Image (cartoon, rainbow, N blue to C red; front, top):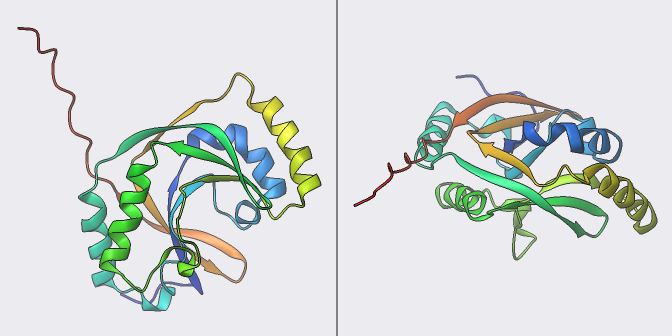
Length: 188
């Protein structure tokens, strides 16, 4: 396989169920949306330089993700980092398990370059705003979200995006394993 295009990569779960609500906010207030990444929860950023991702590593990722079941989650709780407004997925454990599994296999690929003690799964709504701007966006978002939240999502696959210049493109997706079947009614 030839090297993947680009100068950076990330692994993310796309959340199309959130796009109608968060898309208009992200288009204006999230550089990742402006660069081509749809509503998502990041699993690992940065992953590796695309030129360092070979066929064997792609196969390793496919096997790793297939070992993790697909899962449902909801987005209901609005939270903040400095300059960032985001929705918290619940539960967070499946997202964290995926990140941990990747970093165990690829220890050089630490979330956000290892600069944070704890990595919190999140779906960014707005990023890079001043406190005043964030407050104004929050008020508009809360009005738009009234009666819409919680959103229910389902993680079926992990997408690999690469960035070339300022634009991100999805180059592959890796299916998650199937969720265990629910047991039939077990009446005695």
